[in-house]
Image (cartoon, rainbow, N blue to C red; front, side, top):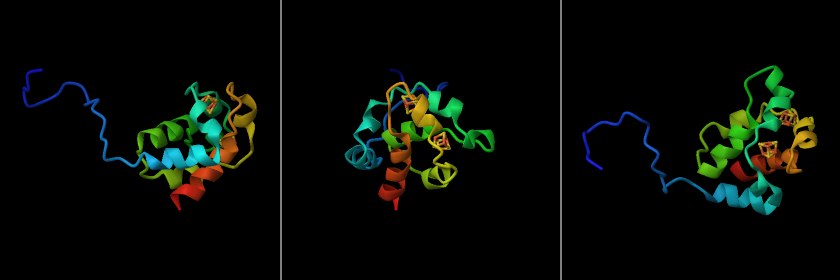
Length: 106
Ligand code: SF4
Ligand code: SF4
């Protein structure tokens, strides 16, 4: 591709320097983490999302991409009510994923 010195679209290149081990550690604690299809049902039913901006689907995506900035601040918004777990079409133990995130990023 010709390099014009600027891009119209945001670069889609993957930064391999990011920490992808966090996702692996979470899968070890909660194997269902890897089966997420990113449908967003968890986010649409989330209790915390009624009070603030909280997106569990996005958090999972960011962890899989190794984008860990402000993850802790985000997961602290979760009330561990379990509604997302009841609605998840893949039967993912989302509450355990939240707890695993705390364990792994500390
Ligand atoms: S509802 Fe389940 S499969 Fe869908 S995004 Fe949430 S965790 Fe992933
Ligand atoms: S457990 Fe957390 S992420 Fe799931 S619905 Fe409740 S507040 Fe939202």
